[in-house]
Image 1 (cartoon, rainbow, N blue to C red):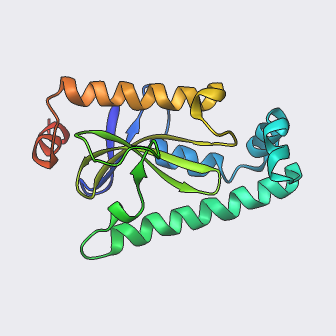
Image 2 (cartoon, rainbow, N blue to C red; image 1 turned 90 degrees about the vertical axis):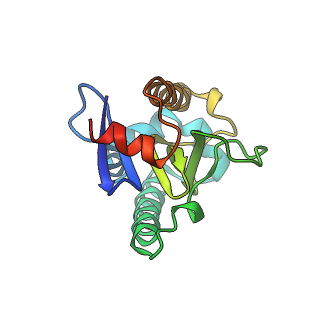
Length: 173
C-alpha cells in the first residue's frame, strides 16, 4: 500500500499493491467506463429497481453524478482555506462526534468516496463504490470497502498516525 498525494497533504489516496492507479483515479475511471457500468447495473438490476431506472438511465446518471462529485472535490480543495470538511461526513449517519482516524464518506446520489479523516481538512481516500442498498454489509463490493477502510485505519495506527504532523512524517518516510 502506498499513499499518493492528490492535493498536498490535505487530500491523499491509497494506491493498493497490484493496482495501476490510486483509488480516486481508479474510481472516477470506473464511474466513466460505460462497459463497467453496464456490467455493474446488469449484475445489480434488482437493487437498481428501487430507483425505477433502466440500466442505460443509471449509466447516464452515474456519469453525471461522478462529474458533479469530482467538481465538488476540486472546488473544496481550491478554496482558501481548504473546505474538505464540507464534503465528507461520518460514515455512519448515527455518529455525531469526530474521532481520531474516523471513517468518512463523500456522496453524490449512489456514488460514495470512502476516506479516513486524519485531521481537520486532511483526508485519505481508501476507496469508493456505487451503493444501491441501505447498508454496506448487504453487498460484497460495499463490504469490501468497509474492510479497506479498516485495513487503512490499522495501517495508520500501526505507523502512529493520529494528526496532520504524524501523517506528514509518514508521507516523508
